[in-house]
Amino acid sequence: MPGFPDIADFGCLERTTAIRIASRAVVDALAVPPSRNRLMPMRFRAQLFEFEDLPWFPTVIRAGMMDYLRFMISNLDIYEPVVPLLHNALQQTDQQRIIELGAGAGGGTEEVVKDLRRLPGMAKVRVTLTDLYPQPAAWQDIRHRTWGIIGYEPTPVNALAVPESLTGFRTIFSAFHHFEPAAAEAMLSDAVRKRAGFGAFEGAGKHWHEILLAWTVLPVLQLLATPFMKPFRLSRLFFTYIIPLIPLCTIWDGTVSILRMYSPDQLLALARRADPEQTFQWQTGKVRHWTGSQVTYLVGWPK
Image (cartoon, rainbow, N blue to C red; front, side):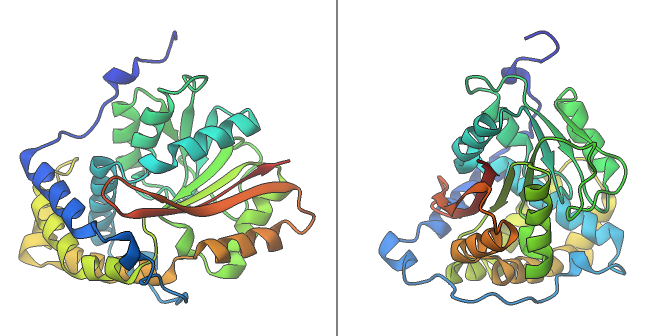
């Protein structure tokens, strides 16, 4: 289509030998038999703190953690299983624009958009990244790689009160767990009130073995992957290999993220409270990634 580059030309991170080895390690580590998986889900949610949420937390450490998250999500295509769900939701809402809330460094969207644009009727899908704390340096790199298909809003955007000017299907990747129940419900209420489709996606299934991975396998992958992350930053190398604040804080935040995640039942309860008149169609559950891990989701659109 004019003005939209062929998806085969979409910029992406280089698949290096180190990352292929790391990906294989993830596959092996996450290959938990289904019978065991059923015995390991968490039955509770803990509202603990994450370093990246603290206002005094050093920007350079936060940026290094976000770079790692974006790198691994993109290279492992963690959110590939939700593409059919998002495709259906976009069709239900007749939307071709996605407003990503709480985008951080933008790690959830790039591969998802690439996969979406391969599907019938999705050739014009575009994304606008937003965050209460915008990261234009990281987002400019994504915009450049995608020829503007993924753009961004440079001003702060509160996910609990999205401006009327930002119309489209709202998504939030890897960040819904940051919001305590009252705030999460307010985010959903805002979408319902403005008749905006909504999708929340978390790259885990809330299982105990995922915490074990956060303590063991994933730190090794972070050490392997850091030299290949773009854009190159000396500060990232220093705070990974000399003073390892980035990997140590990543271990803590990764563990707490799993503890803070909402289960599908909790997500549905939040949606029902946010939509007491039942004006939206809600779907929630888990889908399996090719590594054997799971993605937890909540998707809704106006009836």
